[in-house]
Amino acid sequence: MVPPDHRAGIKPSVANKPDDIAELIGLRLGVEVEAAGLAAAGRSDAEADSIIRAAAALRRIPAQTSQLLQADFDFHRQISRATGNRLYGELLESFGPAMIAYPAHRLPPLDQTNHIGPDEVICREHETIAEAIADGDVDSARAAMRLHLAGTRNRLSRNE
Image 1 (spheres, helix red, strand yellow):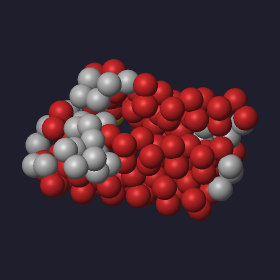
Image 2: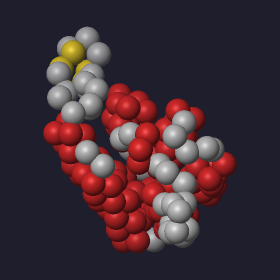
Image 3: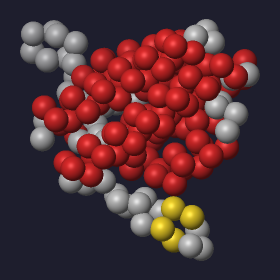
């Protein structure tokens, strides 16, 4: 999935099959859970504000759009930048927005019975991560990121 390019480091391939997506989510769990904890432990006030703003931006963008995918990636990128370790940011940048697994059918609005749809759940997950990081709560930030990525994996497996 990640063939080496000796001139440019690692160039990840696109995850477009269910097995690829499962591996990508597994990698993200290993990397982003720790990144959330590091960000909570060492973020500046400006970085905390940018993470909060990035989470809030997800609510202002219509579901099922490429802008939502970009906003979601930007949120995760802001966290990686707040870790204090440039390699987290470089790793996420190497994947780009393709690391966000967003099949169109995953983001319906509230359903016919007014249950909370996946888009609301996803927004709440991002807000919980952002709040924990802004509060400097390392354990809660890690737990919130783990819950978000495990939820992503579960939503994707239900919709395959």
